[in-house]
Amino acid sequence: MGFILLAARALKEINSEFSDSPLRLQICIMITGVTFFIFACLTPTISAMRRWLIVSSIVTITYILILLVILVKDGKSNKHTDYEVEGSKTDKVFNALGAISALIFANSPGMLPEIQVFLQTIVSQHMFISPVHETLDTKFLKLEESMFSRENIKRRLCLRALFFTVNTFVAAAFPFMEDFVNMIGSFSLIPLTFLSASMVFIKVKSKTATMEKKAWHSYNIVLFSLLTVATTSSAVRLVIKNIQDYSFFADA
Image (cartoon, rainbow, N blue to C red; front, side):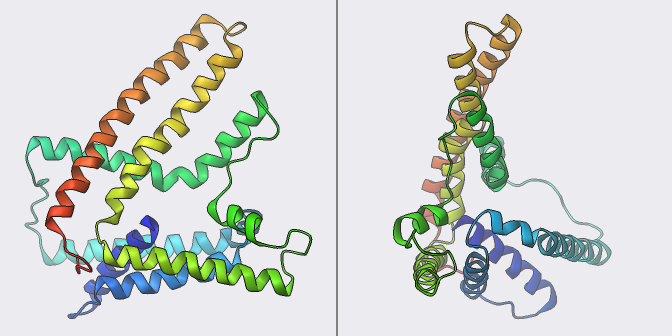
């Protein structure tokens, strides 16, 4: 949901640079929702994503080049741009903490498999951090049949359609949904990404690890526990503020 809204905002900004009457945010959300749905259907498992690495790289580079063109265009047309960050000192601090949560959430798809591998090596071979699509597929698909059997393809299309329809509608209705994404990233992904590995290490290796390693992991636990509290407080504050400022289906 957060990625749909983020992609839609980026699409709207790109469109506004080349059009005097840019598309409404909700139209961009529908476009990105359909794109996510198609991609999810074409990549039914994590393993299938490897086929899209080249395509993903090309799209990413293209997006970066578009951004560079826009930056150069804006820089030439307005040489007196004020780059001062708006808001009070308190707002700047809370916004910076919110940005940390957003960055962690955005990078979590790449970090979670690494955490899974680390935990497997020291705890159990049966631990698995499963993405939502694979969880749904395991529950509703016929496991005795092939992933690409007619029945499983039909069920998978229905699951993906329902999932992205709900996510796209909620993202369109709540244009500040990324604030909830920040909140999820702060109180769940920061502990999972930075705390869990150190806590498991101390639990399992406390009797054999050196004092330096135990001190390092203890330091990580304290530091990222404080960061979790700070970023979660920032996310909750931003959610409350934007609930008061935004309306349903706002073009913002």
